Image 1 (cartoon, rainbow, N blue to C red):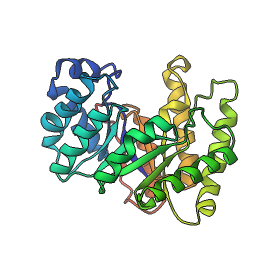
Image 2 (image 1 turned 135 degrees about the vertical axis):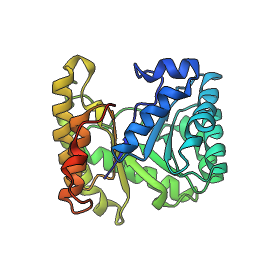
Image 3 (image 1 turned 180 degrees about the vertical axis):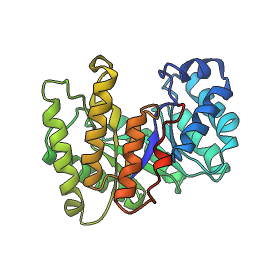
Image 4 (image 1 turned 90 degrees about the vertical axis):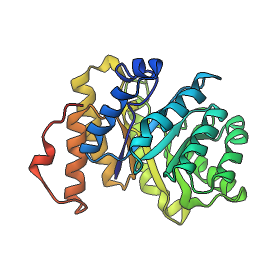
Length: 270
């Protein structure tokens, strides 16, 4: 299981001012610290503003990530022009890239599918939104099967696909039911598709800010462990949540994928 840093976005309290000023240095420091924690994939959430989103995408890839040629970027925007900019620059840099913008909504499908066909090396996250969030595991499986069928018909191979079952806050009236159904979904998905497909969640969506930071981190740590046990491939996380990063490192060690090192579990100044 790999972590994806979610902090490079237009609402992060520390990164947003740097993006607004197009100041590369604070973002580079964040990336350097995250790399020390073993993170190599970074979500770039530049919003959807018609003019700002493409500019921010170009700024990040040309003036920030050009210093980190080995990193994977996850392009998180519904602005088609910004996606095009990101895919073009990442392709030019020969950088692994994930498109984190596709759902089952017809408008998004029509806008994003041509870019996936043009940039054949990109991976794609399919968010199981229709546009409502499915509630049960069965509803999520139906949405996943529909999405897979559409992609195959469009000539997109499923080895490029990452499925996001959509995590919702526990504080919703039926939030606890959603989390339980996501666990069932991850268990059932490989058999339903008759082939392995990668999966991802936005882990921080499991709570809201009103929950309080200590409780939020506890919830995320427990849920991450449960998801990892079911074979989750990617978790998008706040890299400043040190207990969560340590949990992910321990999971890798306990799964036999990484040598255990107590020193690696020491807190980093993220």
